[in-house]
Length: 101
Image 1 (tube, one colour):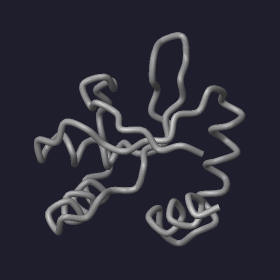
Image 2 (cartoon, rainbow, N blue to C red):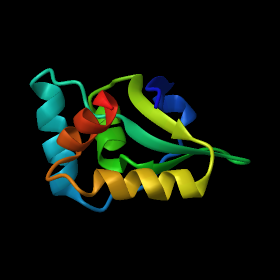
Image 3 (tube, helix red, strand yellow):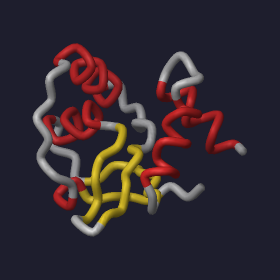
Image 4 (spheres, rainbow, N blue to C red):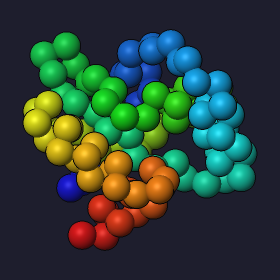
């Protein structure tokens, strides 16, 4: 699994409906923490966000230009990886564990 640096300008604008999650992501950024990677799906339409809308919204609000991301090429890969991420209490812990393997 490879982590890439993705330009936020290359990602679609997605309305966010969970202000508390965005606020939490902003707090992490304000503490200088590197956010966990986004999970993106490469499709015919370009990059689609499969996991990480809160982090994208927070990064845009803080004026960041890039975020780390793992890009997969099929919905099957995305579903499989998202299922692994769901086993952990936080997204940060999940990515930490998955990237160590």
